[in-house]
Image (cartoon, rainbow, N blue to C red; front, side, top):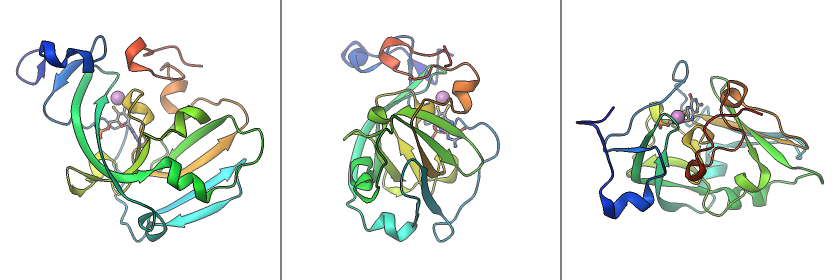
Length: 198
Ligand SMILES: Nc1nc2c(c(=O)[nH]1)N[C@H]1C(S)=C(S)[C@@H](COP(=O)(O)O)O[C@H]1N2
Ligand SMILES: [Mo]
């Protein structure tokens, strides 16, 4: 892995690189299965489970406040990319549109293509989490999750669902795709929560 594409961090950057990670200047694509190709006019986003069921269109999302986010991105397969520039919508702004039932503790992200990944509600509902629809100022490419993905910067990137199309609110933890296949339930890169499942 080391060499031309993956570098040991410079000392001045090392406090930004979690243990066991190597820096890459490119932006690798990590997808299990096919890349769904979804236009913004057909894209829809639903919430269900322990929330009042609702479905949103692309323009519903575009009417929410938009922000620029610069965040580091850490894949559990040991590459990290620093200073990724996204444009998106804060989870906290989106959640103003949602009515949760009492007792919600967890959320499952659902995607076109069938990928899922789980989060504790408080790991999901954070000021620094966002739905991204641009990458470095350009529409988010399909291979990186366009037209819309979630970005959860404080956890390993498998928690950042590409082609996201829904949230299922839950009163108990359920494992998503990689969590069923041996990855950690939470995925904090700083404490190397790589494996463990549920
Ligand atoms: N829908 C979906 N989302 C996904 C994945 C996937 O296979 N399908 N892979 C995850 C993993 S393991 C990583 S590291 C990141 C990779 O994002 P990238 O391909 O934009 O680098 O997306 C995550 N989100
Ligand atoms: Mo990953």
